[in-house]
Image (cartoon, chains in turn yellow, brown):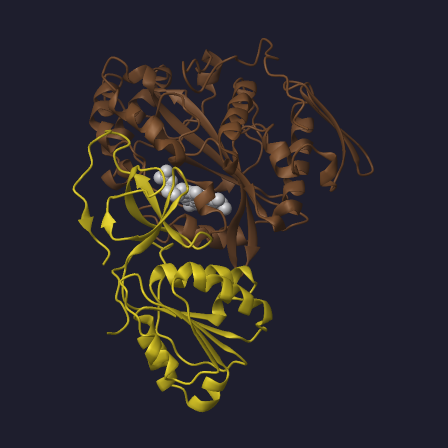
Length: 205
Length: 356
Ligand code: HEM
């Protein structure tokens, strides 16, 4: 499994690269699901693997499809390695670690868009520059979507259209993406012709 | 505390009308003559259409920095209603307060200078006295001291000014939309877009990125100088004189797009013109963007023969991606059919002014 290739899209849609080691006092790695493979690839590229590991903190959670490679990461031997059961339980730990992180910290985010987006949002809110954050997409392409009508966020959206988990409207999924919300936009699909809802298809796996 | 706002203070000039429910909005004959018809030729495509925002023809919407017209009081009442229903339509990130004061100063000084019969501003050092007669507001406050106004400076002044406003912070060679008062938008969400960069918030626009329009526009805006504002037009189509076509409420107004017929087209379909102006602000170095919306019924616009001919040709020939993006692809043929009765095929003169 390698980096996910996405078709070209509009300019608010995030783009992802391939993680590469960079000099830093602290290497803060946040990953979920298949993102673990990007982390092992990253460390394999380190020129001085032992010293990088000695200043690495890994925060990991299984992916939305259940993929759990926490054992692979624990085996790397990083200074700190933590497995959270879910993204919502991972984020408070990340926020706490960010309070002590100094400028010059390198951030590596790997896995699904929901995890990467929320980690990036919290890191940037702490004032770190986008240039210190690397992102690599691996694994599931399910989306985190905000309903533009009720503002509720539905996690792990696989189909288009889908039903908003808060207000129940049928929404189509746009590529328009807000980094502040770490979410794509969902818009009512039958607003103009109430009741005419196209067959839902699995678009994000 | 709230704005000392006395709606109903209509005199002979300001119209008492609605932009919702019974939709009594319309333009007076004088209002039609000064409508900012945005097409200077018989076809339309995106371009980097910017010109200096200098005082234009007397009586036209270009005469003053912030045009105040016969719809002023009713528009401000409509804005207050939108905000009461959804306060998220006005947001300002914490670092934008100074830019809000900059904008307040720009608007108060412009209006007091351009419309002394309605607005006055007197200063005693930082102690300012603002009078807005049409809205019945008389406020003394300390400039740069938020605690002396009933709202933050940005919300305070934009509750008294026609048109939507956004404030852009400049960082990293880019503009960031970090504040907005957005209640008369053509179907985009401030709550979703706030915090985005120039290319991010423009991402949904078709064709223009590929044409390099946004690259050139951003480069131009980064060089914008204080005291040398610029302006441009944008336009779309709206069923009913509904100022607040927000994505948030799309399930409420979307169905009106299926209510059109040849009999009601002239009254229901509106050309929606945005006169947009951009100002560099002096203290914050932010860029203020004003989006002033003018609504003209088809039946009003075709009373000017040149506009009737031209509007028909523009609607008929518009690129389908633009018609889809602007939300009227499903009605385009019916609109062109209605307008065709006002197009005798004669040539039109260049420029947007109404005379032939
Ligand atoms: C800082 C100032 C500006 C702001 C805040 C702004 C904001 C916006 C927003 C929010 C949209 C709607 C996008 C959507 O569909 O979600 C839009 C559309 C657009 N903007 Fe801007 N804009 C600015 C300056 C400009 C400039 C200078 C140009 C010059 C070329 C421009 C050209 C356009 C065009 C062509 C569209 C599509 C409009 C349509 O077809 O209805 N914008 N803008």
